[in-house]
Image (cartoon, rainbow, N blue to C red; front, side, top):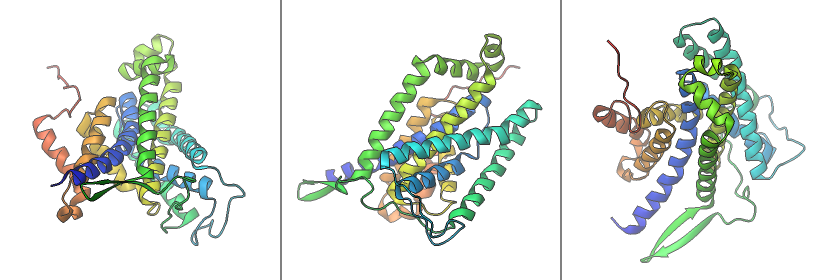
Length: 316
């Protein structure tokens, strides 16, 4: 096994793993506040990618209600990425309003909210398919302006190629992770979110508007989902309205692997799974989608609370 192969696999794994981390953070934020998995997160992931595509490319395909239509404007990719993420955040707020708040107000069983979010996810995906059809969309090669498609390095007579989209993914992911860490630990709103996650009743007694911060959490979660969907779409294409389903399941594996409710755990879990997929031998590439769950199973046997999760002590 040569050094070029190791470096290439490491870059590929770091790139895809950082996207998994951002996506899983959206799951983690909602779970830390409500203790519930938001199954609509995968649909928001898909919707964010399509919104960014529409803003950046402006042309729709040959299927669906929008077939053959074009937007009267096209935004540069950075602005389209920001716009798509913000729109996904707004959809996240809509999910909270429709699937979570009514049930929470009635004191319903958390399982009902989980099922409700799954229903909203199916509605969103089917609406998207009605609008754009089921065809595959791909970002054009010149979407990043004058940047070259890849940076090529020669080592020991072999070629190491780092795609431009991978560099963008790593840069955006690093900025977002640092920004989220600063927001959660250095701002008043971030500390209020942590207080709400720790104990909503106590936070309410301290004057914190719990409903408002839950809504803010869903907006941030949706924006992170839309951002990660766009980064995946820019790298691999948009494989139909249901392409977020497999990534949604993988995101669940990431947060369980890292530790439910742990933000550092979500980041670590995403990187571990991304690197695990990248270093999988080509002879076993057909098992790539199963890597996350195999790793999850093995690690949970040794550490049921996940890599960075806290062990729950049950009172008897």
